[in-house]
Length: 118
Length: 114
Image (cartoon, rainbow over all chains, first blue to last red; front, side, top):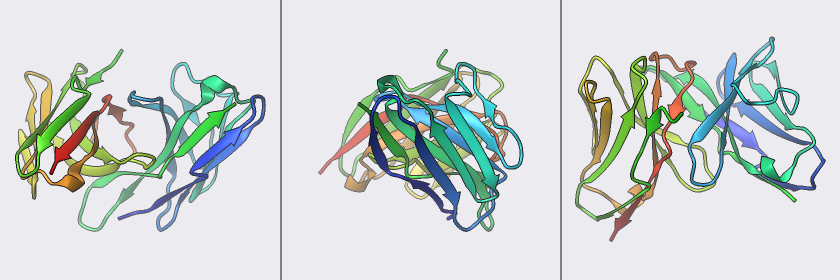
């Protein structure tokens, strides 16, 4: 199936620093990518929709100035957590839609990034 | 407002038996439903889906049932295997398009006992 590569897998940072997470579609082009966040024992919550060549669309309650999304090319979207605080510690996952041969289009997920803010 | 709910946080099933995972939803606009499997520290992987025009979809050991009037779906795994141990999320969307955003349930941790 289609491969979505996400880096880093985990990151530990000090409070107040910024962290960038990359999401790449390896064998297909993605005009749209989705960024999710999962807190322990909770559901995956959609944070924002990343659109290549235009501004991201943020879900209600997600601060766009804190979670900067850049979709610079058809294969790369980045999420930057600015001035991270301990409450931002979470599992962040990106996903992108792709169509496999003979199948409907569906979402493929990256492996996720565990962010721990000290 | 949790529009997709999985009321059982965990489930243990003997190997070889049937595993039944349940999911309820509240938004009547949802038209397409999916099940994802997730291992720790990994992203979810797609398992099976069903459109609202169907009430059953089968793929090998996995079958998803949809009761639209009850706003309920279930995933049956038979026979259950140790490799099925994972967290299972149900998800829903308004359309059957990959670029339609998904609303996820809270997940059910399935443990298959050898």
